[in-house]
Length: 247
Image (cartoon, rainbow, N blue to C red; front, top):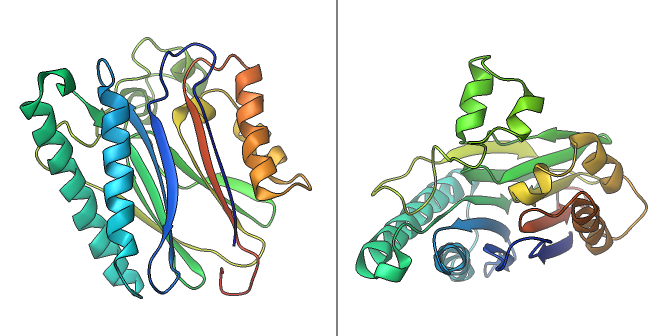
């Protein structure tokens, strides 16, 4: 697999509260994680790094797992990180109110298992067509589902940053899972809302279809989002399948 990762503070924010990284277990199964932190002072970047690094290091200590085993493992680990962040926010005043989104994908012999909490997204490019895999756990998405606002109106809605679900806010957390085929020629993109709020899906698709390396595509996505204003932190993790069986 080819991997591209890029994170940028953006043109406005004073700190980068996104954190993204990839990890392998002892049998070379890949886990990609992207988190977008929130909270006062530096609490957002603490939460995002805590979730990604602790979960990633735990993955490194595992061996080969089936799809069902991976799903159970990911669910338990996300809830562990949720509890860890929640308790730290209660313990330290400067971390009060911290939390983070989390979108992750484990790559398992021709399949990708995506887990999501919050409004960071996963997209799958297959047969040269991009589709969004995850569903945003946001206030504006709830309004759109009820037909109260359009997608265009959601982009400028005053409550567009209000999340309905994130790590660290409550003692327990629900996790969405998506199991998709991941074969040769497919690409899976994890991104923070700094990218998805800046670029139309068609623009993202066009960049992913360019004759570039995975790293060059990741950098091109972030550069294009910066050109559109870069009002938020922008992070992407791109995984491309290069062999049969999704490896």
